[in-house]
Length: 384
Ligand SMILES: *Cc1c(COP(=O)(O)O)cnc(C)c1O
Image (cartoon, rainbow, N blue to C red; front, side):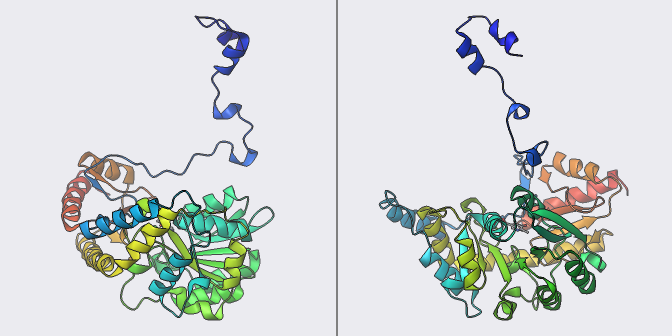
């Protein structure tokens, strides 16, 4: 292979032609367990109506954008210094937002809840250890497990409507003795929230850490509880949250968790020094000051979601009950055809979860009206 390059027009020394030799991933001394893997990626296509990654459709208000600019400008004057390594103010603010008697010592923050999950697995998973999850669920749980060399054990959701049957879950935990259990509630991509009894039963049976990924907590329906209420009695329980969805801050990368202070001591052993930039910290704290405004939009999205579920049912589609800002719907004989048909009409949804279903994020009222119109057209062209 190096011979071919040596004869390239223009010549050059041997060293130069060697440096120019094309290198592919295959040629690099990559870790064996990463060979042949594809990077995580929901398609990021430019479309008029993007309903594929569960983002909040409402951009920050002018008032929030102005406050962000002001506070970032102030922080900019100190950017020659490293940030507060412990993000003390932000953690206290997040604890205040969560309530439940939490304080900053029981909250930890990172660059998106994906980094939170990675730090959890770095501290509690790793070579020779296992993590368990109930599928279909968030695809990053197995991905981050693998990247941290933690063996992944999937268990099927066996309850009706994508629920987790607590007895099956406890049996699976007793049988496999995983070091980390992931419970996603409300679950992505199904929208299913877990009763507290299920979380508590798993937490009692689990020999290791139990992570409740509550990325969509703010979207749950009235009366659906949060696992935050269980923290007091379960020191190995972790509740992870994000500002990417309800707080409409996916671009800022802020995730956080609540847990026993000892858990946070453990995470400080694996976090990179100064992992959360001063800019990120001030952006997150500023957004928290606008919590009321942002949660008002969440209420609107919840109403839009409930209306969408009703409309889908009324029009003969199968729908999973949703406590999140998205809905899993079907049944399609050829879901790829439906996905493409919607895309041709400028609407991007996600081909994920059970093979006969699609996931649509709840957008603005105008976006959902375009979605409904397009779905009727496309599904008439492709009867199940
Ligand atoms: C979107 C999502 C996240 C959020 O990830 P960030 O890194 O905080 O943007 C975490 N968990 C689940 C289940 C999600 O769907």
